[in-house]
Image (cartoon, rainbow, N blue to C red; front, side, top):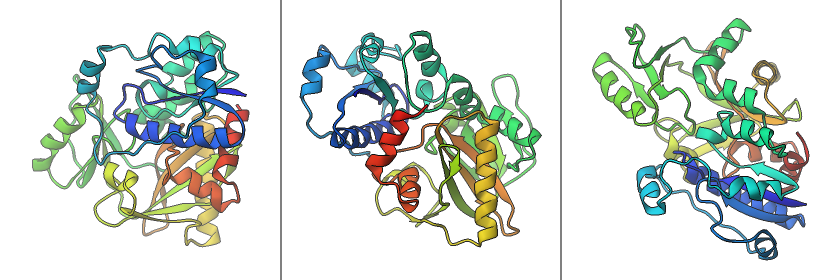
Length: 334
């Protein structure tokens, strides 16, 4: 099959996405597919489809310690605010399948999925509606609440709504970002303003959540089946951008050392979140498990990371699914 892998884009998570895309591309080439890795923002710049497909060199990309400078990228490229390179749709139309390796922004909020639907382009992952519901943390938490899924109490803050914060410590984060970008843990009122300013760098709408103390877990969903649970233990601090993507910064245990009862509880809750948010063939759902054994859902990810140290591939491997097999399964299913 001819496969276009869309990665990068004008997103704070572009480096993570490019690393995911490179690993996916190599896995699919290993399986004999003809692969083109395309930056959603930069495109391929004058490379024709057949020529690119004949060049099957391995892709590599290393994630820096800090998120990218998007303003510098826009200036260097001369492409300005356009979210998609003009050639991307044309390239995707010529492929048998488009593999979405994007994280954040247009890649996960439903905009790109809606555009591909308009052109009749077949792509991997969740459709536009589920992508929108999962990406907007305020909407997803509302849906969880009405469906009796535990999630930390929260407030939404934007330009027109500035509620008083009555709970500390709390977690301040942009409403529609992932990879812990713009996230700050706040212990008191004095620290709050700086945290809000850091979150507003990425988005005007901000979620302020009560901080739940406990152990952090994640559950992958593949073909409507829960994968083994993984526990996430940062060596210091919390599971922020650096701890997520720099090797050796976090210990991950899979399968997690939990009782059968708690394992089943997390898996069933993850499946329920997946269904409530109308997610697609695969996803990843994150939790905090408090000292009472109550599981609080943090969020659902419609395009989980596929980097060399990402959680979903580790969970799949614990279920006996190799990385190339995982990529093949995702590519062939909708």
